[in-house]
Length: 110
Length: 129
Image (tube, rainbow over all chains, first blue to last red; front, side, top):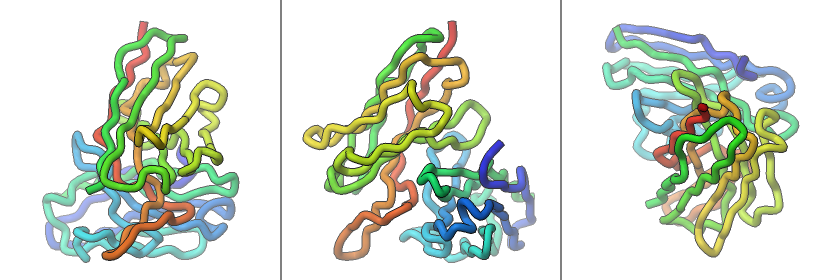
């Protein structure tokens, strides 16, 4: 059971927009800790996608965006492409300064 | 270019020990936090431990506290994870990662409560009799 809750799966057709939610509590996201997002392609190590709630590292397309409100955060992907099919994870901290991850969301491009 | 390379994984019997290493290059190693994250087969990411640049601040997940020890040798640009009393549920790919390394076009600095980047390629630990 992960501390941060994500939907197990989402799907969308090429060109569509999908969102992945990440729900926490008052002891983690709601306490003001930033949320970070990772993309993991099959057989590969995770890759940083969004840091500090809304920031994209260099090289990440602007089709990916993040937001945070209250005890939740969201990752949005617009203009869905076949290469976006992957697992996505959110990450934050809790009040004990432990790292917390979401359980992961598998994105399927139809 | 920042790079992390893990080694030391393998097959070990329940109750046994293993020491993982992570060699870093491409950044000022001693300036930054580093962490270990694991992923059991077919499962999600699970944070294991992290350590500050000086080694003075260390945090562990409850699942490994008292059994695993994180350490670093800044002279060797290396991070370690000593794993004792291993259990079947410790079977996973173990990744080392930089934590909160924020680089602009001109400089890099440590961000607090940071993200994990870069990541190593991972090393597989299998605990089985």
